Amino acid sequence: MKLNKNNAGLDAEKLAATFLVNHGLKLMVQNYHCRYGEIDLIMKDAKTLVFVEVRLRTNNKFGSAGASITPQKQQKLILTAQHYLQEYSRQHGESLCRFDAILMTKADAQHIEWLPNAFDA
Image 1 (cartoon, rainbow, N blue to C red):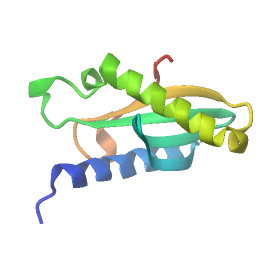
Image 2 (image 1 turned 90 degrees about the horizontal axis):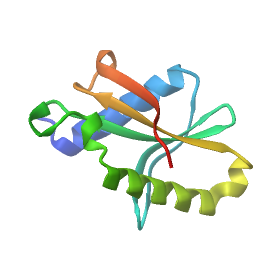
Image 3 (image 1 turned 90 degrees about the vertical axis):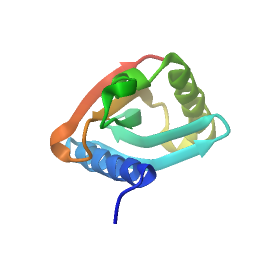
């Protein structure tokens, strides 16, 4: 069966979640949706809540995986994270937050680039 773009994206998110768990983070939520957008992974790193954007780019024809996290995309992620915090802040207490990116050129563990604090809110 040929993988379509959505299957490849889901596979990349699963790989990213496993990678981060193997690096000591705890998976809280996968694919959080609200009216502002979606956050691929919400993780916990000690007392820090980590909002993770996963990008798989097998072709750089339209830019790299990192370049695809534009200022507009960052703004959507920030608004979505704020919505999540308003809805679920009691569950996490007074947590610090950060935005990480997981960049991949192939959907396998050898092609993962992790950017902690990829951008600021």
